[in-house]
Structure formats: structure tokens, C-alpha cells
Length: 302
Image 1 (tube, rainbow, N blue to C red):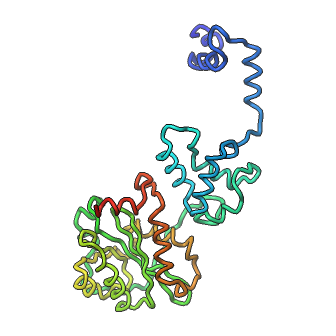
Image 2: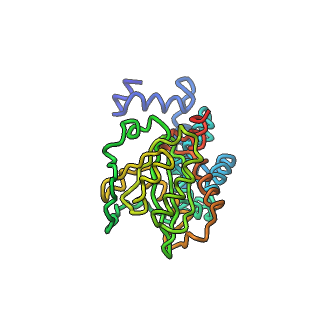
Image 3: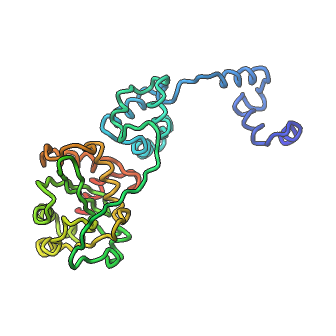
């Protein structure tokens, strides 16, 4: 094989694979191997999802539940680690959706993707202006090290998701598990927001009440009252630094699938917000090794 490879200007492994895939050394026939090579080269080929009905059904089922292609691909690897036939890359799922000539997945499933875009775009940062000074605010730089490395549960990030007509939803994300909670609030006044947050946080087990990191929004100006009511210390991000609450910013982006910009958020009940939070918490997350936040927080509370 090495001598043939040298004469043909190819790698020995290439020659070895060619012989192995066409019957082995004792059965290799050049004419038959050549015919098979031309057959394999024919295009177009049916895509993987078009050829595997069960795999296609499972992908379509998860897309209908608003799972992202990457989450589906990771979940399939976990569920079928030894069965390559039941695994597919997230890029294959995207191509099957966007290139309709493939005909593997129905076009209607595209409506369940997180964004309506059919191309990936770079995300530009946004800044908030006109934020007032918060009295006695404790800087994020004073947070304990255990908050930064996400090793200990009970540390939360929070923000307001804004909609039309000055309507808002309070969002909370636990840093260790990425568990999400959504709160209906009638206004963004500090007394209203602090009371709603305190009422909700007091229901949590003590091991999930350690700290809260918020941006510089004036809705948390009364943070001392929140800390007295919950025994949860509030830390504030630096001005115009949303990346310091990365988990919360990411979650707010996911929520725009359900609450697009310009939507009047006052129309949604707390029961509906709980339903959306449950849906997010039951999605596998790449950052959790494709476990779900619900699984992670269940393990914390056991």
C-alpha cells in the first residue's frame, strides 16, 4: 500500500480506505470500485433528516416546543450516545429549515425559531442613558468570589423587560442553574418593584436566597428595603455595563420570542408568565452540558 501511495502521490491511509471500502485486498476490483465512486458522487443527495423518519420526527417535535437547533443536537447526543443514526448537527437542522428544496422539515417550523432572521447577525451592544444615582449602592466589584465563579447556588441577576405603553416584566435568573422567574409588575416605580420582588423571593428556600445583582435602573433605588425584607444583599453593575449580568441579558433576549418589542406587557397574567418561565426552565442549555435549569435546581434542593 505504501508503494502504491508513493507511485500515485497519495497518502497510504487514503489507499487503505479505498481498498477497505471496496471489498478488501482479496476482493478489490477497479471497475466496480470506480462505478461505486461515481454513484456516491451523484448530486443532489437526500439530506440526513429526509432519510431518517424517526430522527426527523424527534427534531420536529422539539422545534415545535421552541427548542433551538443547538439544544436539539445536544439533547440527541445525550439521549442516543451510541447511535449515530439518531444524531444530527445543529447546522443540518438549520439548512433543512432554510433550504426548502430539501423538503425534510415543514416551513411552518421556522416560526418556532427564537428569531425570525434566516441569517445570523452580529449583535451590537446597547446602552441606557439618564440613569440616576442610587444612594448607598454596593458595587458589583464587592461581590464575594463565590458569586463570580457560579459555584454556589442562590445568587440571582435581575432586570426589567420593557414593553409598549410603559409596561414591564421583572426577570430573575439564578447564576448557578440559569433558573428563570418572571414577575408581573403594574409599574416600574421603586416601591412597586421592590415589593413584588421581595414577595416573590421570600417564597424561595433559604439556600436560594444569597444575593441579587441589578443594573443601575432607578426601580431598585429602594434596595435597602428589599434587603431588610429578604436578607438578600443587592449589588449594582457599573454604568452602561450590561455584560456584567450576562445570564440575565441572555434570558431577556430569549424572552423576546414570546414578548416582542412593542408588545403591551400588561395583558399577560402571572399564570402566563409562569408558563413561559417553565418552558425556558425545561429547555436544555449548552452552558449546562445540555441539562435543563429545572434539573439543576432540583438537584440543588435535594
